[in-house]
Length: 161
Image 1: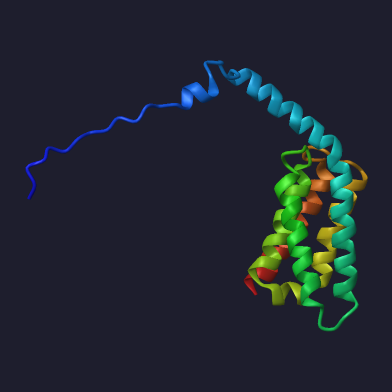
Image 2: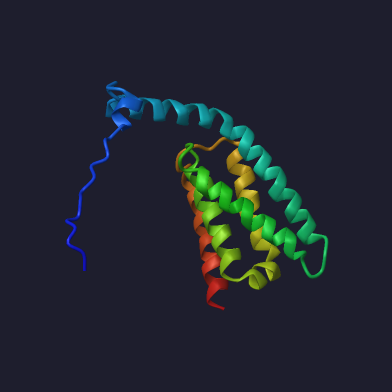
């Protein structure tokens, strides 16, 4: 053991000197900036969804062109549906989020089952195309709700078997 007393060294906080004493934005300003950014993004969403739909439609065509369905094509459909589900609600298209969520979950739970039921995958993609082409914002109407419910029921039935 040593007889030396431990020393406490205080390091000066130089962070304030680096950033200055400028006050930051208040919460209302931050919210307004975020809303403006979302508005800008939602204006571009139609372009994004168009690109996503081109990709998912091409992957669907590739999956349908081979027996058994091309696993890379199924994986691409799963990936794109995940992207759609992640962005639709935020940018004013909750129906796309819902159908993307359903399709992604269906493929993710059992890719082999999904590959055996390409007609159900195609129905999800057709619904996405319908929503995007008609620019159905919000929850849509009774027809969209009925189609979404029918897709959900079909997925539930196949997921149980």
